[in-house]
Image: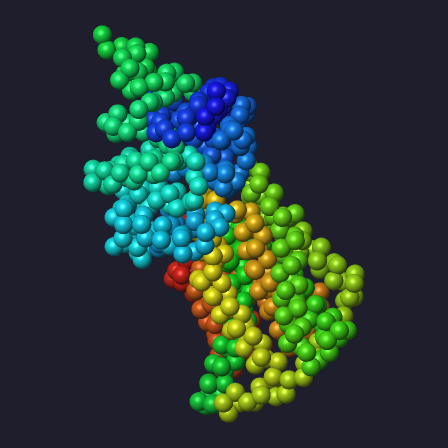
Length: 243
Length: 297
């Protein structure tokens, strides 16, 4: 099976704990996939392993048909697999503008500074961060940092897959809607998304398909409505069946 | 005993030596903020800079081109740092290592010993003095050694260049980003390992420059970097580890305090006045003038 992002037998252990157990997942180009699961299911570990923050113990990751297993984070980003963190990692002492330009300049862009600046201006407008463009990122609220972090990823030309780890956690509804709009817009221009989230309403709105992880394994995959009826999934979330 | 002229002269010479101390402190603090390690061999890069200055002036360019030799010495130390970093320092970050600080300390102290021994083996335990063609210069009403004046001028130019690179160029932006969050810089696509090498090279080149500039005044010998390194660390305590303004202002402050103490109290204790300042700072602001509490990435 071909896909833009394919993992096979991906396993990561911490001592005796198997955080990811032979995870096989295939993302089709252009989809917005949700990744859900109870706390401790291994979702963040999976994100860390595919983006090079941690090395897998076994298994492979392929992006657009090429193996990226075990590459360093900056190489993986350069290949077009870009991530955000659960707690937004922005550069606090750099301005919002500078935060956006770091990933643009770091990428092997060939289109020059003017293109980057034009893109930055567009993203500042779409993200409503424009009035804060010259403020240091540490002065931003939690939600604004999440927006900034996502936009920083969108600054990299030619990204194939964006992996967002809990992008909606703890941010207010207005910022949430802005972020959703941005994600959908990027998706329309061709980027694939994998979104880890506990916010079922948003997942239902924007992800036609979801993957469920339970105890380090892929437990189910398909449309959310279908999956929500499966007893093993419900049990894993609630600790017992609903009956 | 008190005279305005003496006070002004003391202040000027304090500021002049202070900017040279600041070069050392800036190098230490800059390497720390990017590579996350203390380079204990800074004084040996100072020493390398001074030896290159001597060799280039004495055997190649001659005293009239002392200024070109300064550039060669700085570039030479930069290159040595750039080549050494991937071999000696990079393993600290590339592998998940438990005691990174211990690793960096052991490796840089080993480097310190190796470079000193190398200097003794090649040049012997002798003192050398690279010549310049500089005459006595007048700073306002005061006569001063030309080499001392030009050392300060060069140091100021270097500090201005450093500021330009850090605040106006892409590599400067990447360096500032990496100093704040290594992982976020990596996931943004920045090759932080290459930046480490650049930062290490810039840091040791600042020490090499100080060594080359001060060589005509403080001479060239295997342990000539020791005193200046101690000053560099005094400044780090005064200004705060990881702070660039702290390094600059701390450097000038240390230079002025030492000069004032030497002029108005007693000159044999010149090196002690700085420690009094360090003790005062530790009592009032233990994290330094510009330091932040609990800085750790």
